[in-house]
Image (cartoon, rainbow, N blue to C red; front, side, top):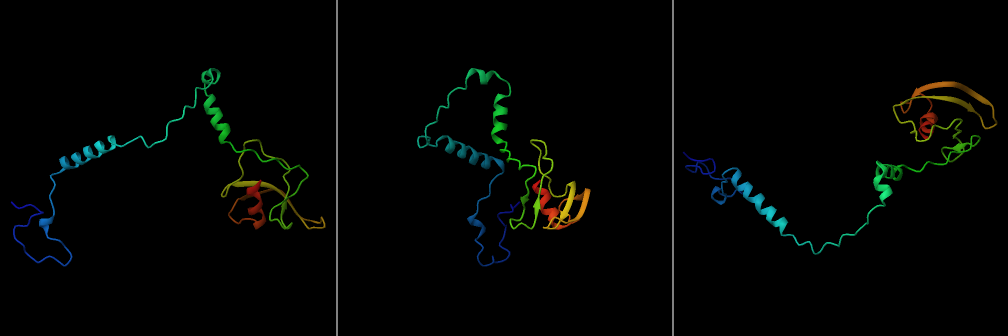
Length: 163
């Protein structure tokens, strides 16, 4: 019986650019692939490590720190935690756009470590809109909306994520 790689008789001429089948070798399954893997492992073992820089001795931590369970984890978390931004004074207005047209004032700061609102989150705000001369235009003591859905004026979608 003839194998797939060796046709019994050439039935048709090969298209241009296709090499004849005699140039190819048929592999017998997994055995050859395993042999190649063994050769790769031998090459890895032969790698020259003399070009690598020497390892640095970081020293042993003091015995006090090593004995405290979770000390390393607490130190890591403290290093990864971003520094809290200084909270503005309660009477201070923050200029959102930088041109004085949109300002916000934080009345009650959030608890330490709390995150800012994100798009898609339902938020509740106390909204007061006023003109430059101080004339109050609108006041909503509990305005509830989904952030980023354009349910409210664009100024709220811009300023609430900064709270």
